[in-house]
Amino acid sequence: MKIDVAVCDDSVIELKVEEAMLRRYGEKRRDAEMSVSAFLSSEEFVKSLRSGRHYDICVLDMLMPKHNGMDVGRVIRRQSMSTVIIYITSSPDYALDAFGVFAEQYLIKPVSINNLYAIL
Image 1: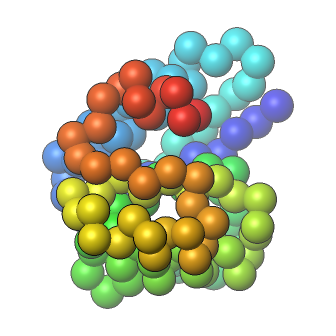
Image 2: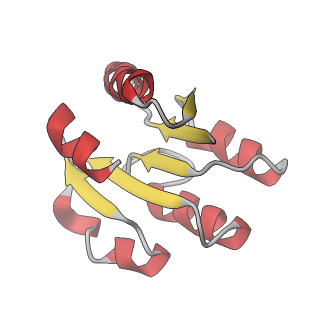
């Protein structure tokens, strides 16, 4: 089984940390091959989605320029109801809004590797 994961965060440091955690998780899985695509720009991520790219899991920041996490979540939901959406953000302000796109989880930064792995 192949699992395609996208991570989108406008902070270079946060993006690298989240991508590394996801890649480490993928290396531990024996039952699936996991690929991770990282996006520093919500605009580039939305372009990827609109071009027809599908991801099984999307890990998103909420506070990003151009398209915030809710905007991106709506684009994902128009494409697929089965994609798992996980928000990792510094703001608790949009946690209830995340229900509108049927997010699996809403985590506040910094996220521990154990918390992320439990969700995955």
